[in-house]
Image 1 (tube, rainbow, N blue to C red):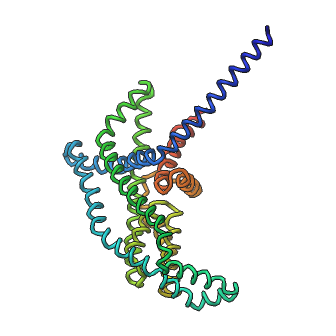
Image 2: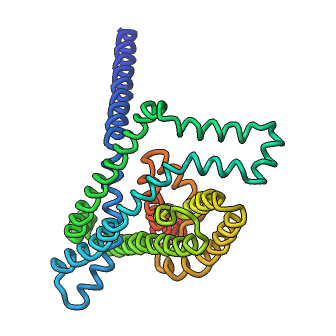
Image 3: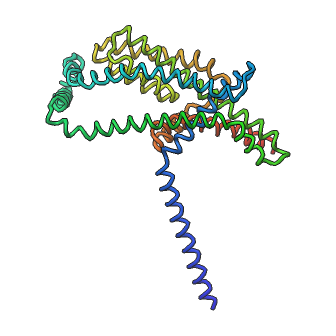
Length: 350
């Protein structure tokens, strides 16, 4: 009798364990399927938190919040929309010229003295590989093979454009319902702890908002400064590269380094001296940004340690791509602030 009970209990435990594993797999698959949607929602939340300080400043001028939200949204998104509307034709033209000139760039690159010297050390492997790549790109018979990649790039651009529209719409919605949502969350906390919780939550929201807008400002400064530098040095595709510098500038530590390497490599097509000047410029600019721009812009935002930035950006990029890398830093900042405001004081009191 006891043996039957034990067998039955073991069967029930095994069944429940199997169902638990199956449920976890199904939930994991569902989360992976809607990963982009999750990224859009988080991006919209952080944008809404970033624009909320501007909305509060407008309301202090005497304007109602219901009017301040559309005013700020139309001003900010309208500015970037008009900027993109004017830049997209130029970006498309420069991108087309860049694609057409890739074989010529490769051919010119192989004629550089330092490339020839390095090629001799590797028994002609470098120049041979570059010449094969240029010949492959120049041969029209290979274009049908590359069509799938072109179509994929087109789909990626379309998905990115669609995602941007979704994020903008969600951002406006979250801005409009932010106060109601926070009031609802506060009501879920016990009355004895509600005031403390509200103070900490407001501080977290304000710090994250300042962090997001501060990082956008830093990226914008980097993009404008890079555009001026590349125009002076005559580096080709300056507009496209400066746009990439802005996007990479949104990712602290890692992004500026990637942007600097990318611009320096393109500058090699002009001359090694130009590439060296570009690299030196970025070394100097990174120091100016780290010790002058960032402390002033990010003074009221939560500080994120460098190691945490690297790990968060890599983890976010692995999970959700570029969007994940962008939103991973504010998530890490919010976790750090929660630990500092809640966990550390509680441990100190014990």
